[in-house]
Image (cartoon, rainbow, N blue to C red; front, side, top):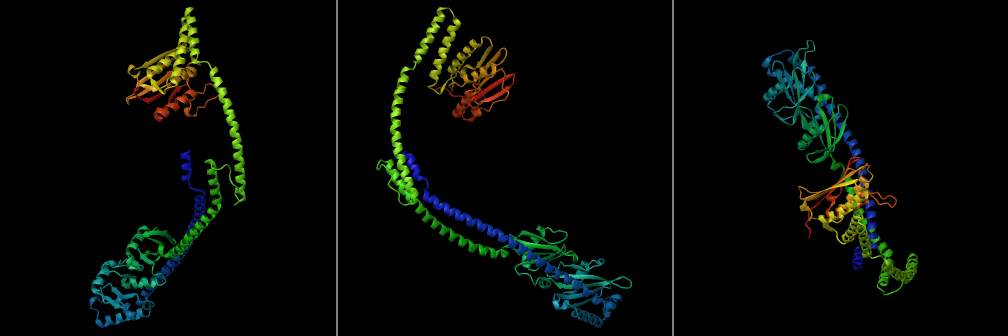
Length: 586
């Protein structure tokens, strides 16, 4: 009683339960709404980001394509100039006069100034490479450069068999790209030379990405070149080219991790020069408004939970105060300090509860008095019944008398059967006081049982016992073999037509354990029973309940490894065995 009362005090109170429950409900609802708000809003922002990034990519691609078309459209203007065309068509070798060179290069500057390229200011210089190794060069907006080395490198990089516009970088420098086109004679179709435009890649990208958020970066690349809007994002650009998967047509939109940072990426292949353009925007930047809103929402969530907690405490105290008062008075009643609950005037339900409790106390008191009188009468009746029960000694005396009469009449068979039955009953009574016995005593009991069954069935049942003598003094559970022998005789050998054989084996295993095996050549099991599922039945006496009881005892004493094992082949044999640790008697 003291333990139960202490345990009840340690349980959480109703007030704590109400407070925690209300707080948890409010917190879970708010957290779910927060998660829903975040996921829903992030999905909307992601869709908006996809649309925004895709639009920016389309604008960038449009500007890049427009500039490439402008560069390509400028080249024919240089061929329309007679001085330049004459220099290309009339090879003069490296001995061209300086005054003529000056006039041609000045014409190149005039032509460039009249084009749209001059307004965009990303062209550094222009080269005209004639097939006779004559070179004409003019600066537009770039810095001075080593023309001789540049011409040599350009000649090695340009494919003279390419008929379209070419775009390539030079290995000796960064920050520049070169657009070139082979020039052919319009009459003969013979190759005349090459026109090359030196483009500042940084200015080119700045012009093409002027509408893009500066926090984003754009990369334009193919197998030969790479142009970045932000040169500090070179590592991100490398990761992007390795991870991005491009469709043959259309725009791809993906989320990738570049140099440890999440990016939304839109990319597309351009028809011009086999280029690919990609716009990458930091995911954190796009979701920063959402994160700021979420922080405000979480602050509001914490305030709401605190308010809900305060409200829960107030509500729980209001509800539980009359309960605490009632519990106090009930404890007083249990301690004998008072006899009934006082009126509970806080709520109508509690007042009704108090009245019902007092009525119950009165009925319990009356019932207790009635039961006490009944118990006294029952006790007296039991005493009288016990006094009239037959003493077991009387039973043994009667059996001894029957045995003596049988011996007097020279009926040795009846005499032995009565003596065996008496010994069987005596050992059964003695076995109820102990859980264990020796294997030798257990086998004496089994032999008596087998003898009585053999007398009953005459010569129908034969029995073979194989037990090593050294095992006889080891300890075994009481009645662990007899139920198996009984099961074999009753369910296997008795229904069999003709004679049957029973074999009992007790062996020592390699693991120093005792294995008990009961075998018979009876009718066998049509279906091996599930021992734990066996149930007893008043109508059916053949339910193998003895197997279930023995199996349960073995598992309780030695663990699950000691459970019964059944093997059977219908019409041929049945084997029931178990294995237990070897233990000497104490």
